[in-house]
Length: 144
Ligand SMILES: CC(C)(COP(=O)(O)OP(=O)(O)OC[C@H]1O[C@@H](n2cnc3c(N)ncnc32)[C@H](O)[C@@H]1OP(=O)(O)O)[C@@H](O)C(=O)NCCC(=O)NCCS
Image (tube, rainbow, N blue to C red; front, side, top):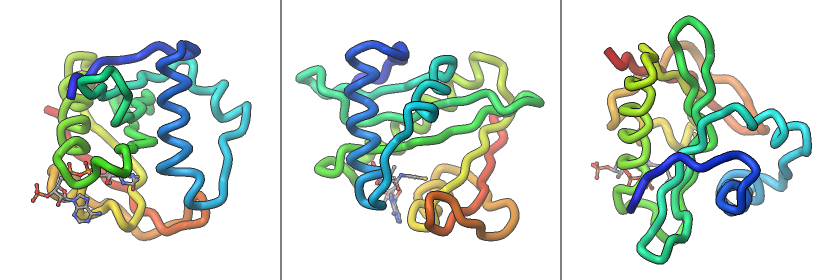
């Protein structure tokens, strides 16, 4: 998998939104609103491409103040989950965040994904809360 940032508003961005919809929204019966997508123009969209230049992995990094960056919308092609792509993409995002002088990665993990982030060195901070109608936990990792 080749991992590179993609630009908001490009055909690659539209392809990444389609993957995020399939993996993260459709199973919950939800859609992205125009406002939600419009707010992403200044985020970093990090995509993983397969050998046919198809996007198979995506995540978003959003600056969260105080040298923190928030990882969100982590989605791997359903046919390729469990093969190490998620771990590869998250690690690449940490390297990128470090290069951009962020000191801490923060995220809201779905309860089902908590073990995945624990394996990558993230810690649960605080109790369970609800987002998009399902249980989540706040997790963090120091990048320094
Ligand atoms: C969660 C997700 C991003 C993980 O990516 P992935 O490519 O499937 O995971 P990887 O193959 O890189 O897994 C890395 C390690 O985490 C473990 N792992 C991954 N998902 C797991 C899960 N749900 N429960 C327990 N362990 C998990 C793997 O077994 C692997 O362990 P290993 O290093 O001992 O072999 C991906 O499965 C996905 O897109 N899921 C649906 C959407 C989602 O939940 N996104 C996260 C929202 S917070």
